[in-house]
Length: 372
Ligand code: AMP
Image (cartoon, rainbow, N blue to C red; front, top):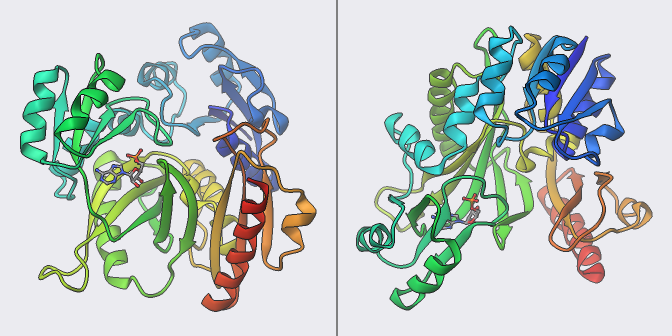
């Protein structure tokens, strides 16, 4: 049974590796000849509007899915028109690709989002700043990732610089959320509508790039229930099939009358970096569960097996030996060339107790710092 995957980056590569174990075959489609998923299965190199190539690609596959959310909507719609089964549904791409559409959609479902303002002109920006106050974050509506296409506006004196950097394309201005922490929920929904949720993951970003994640199987029960409620609404409204991630800010805290609560930052209609710990720390990895979902197979257990964390390898290449001599550390390498600021792998860390996890995470961090 062959699955077609649009996008051939590390997420596709890891999905392929998980699926090969279950006897699946894969065919990737990417614009780049050196896309790393091509290391594990055949790769067609083509543009996302090369209709003939896309048609031939889909004709050889039982169904088509994707591993990155910037696959053009027209590409997914074209493949559906050709009779291919495409999961997750193209509507999810449409919503996730534009930050204004995304936040409006979430708001419509009663899911809290930061105060935001669509910006096309400098006047819009000034109007928006009157609503949000300072600090505020100016972002591109489309194609932003890993902190690219974002500028923090700390005060009126920084408006001009942010406008010079990003002006001239559709933008969104968001109020800066003074969050207590950041968490994400990785959810799966099968073809029959059954759902499964991994424990919340706590995440730490620097420069807009995810650095570290830790599974939170205990201690955040209230927030977990809130997140699952929001995710259920979203999955049902999208008639979603596959794995989806929602990133949240946690705001409020002990001193706040309303207590802690969640504000949604963004959604990703795909497997997600903050779910990589599930490869070694959960009953079933997010990659396997995505495949199970799109194939209409039963979903696997999303329960955590003990304690788990993940550290991204960003522009550094430790040797496998250096990583693996730390007990509980699992080395994951994407087969990409190492460049500053580029995600080239990750280390998953498992442990039996929170103390043991922190001790092991500390050792991996010290290793990465020694290489930076
Ligand atoms: P994004 O690309 O929107 O996920 O942003 C990347 C990271 O930048 C987030 O995970 C936050 O750490 C930070 N960030 C983005 N938007 C905001 C905001 N409105 N308020 C505070 N921090 C933000």
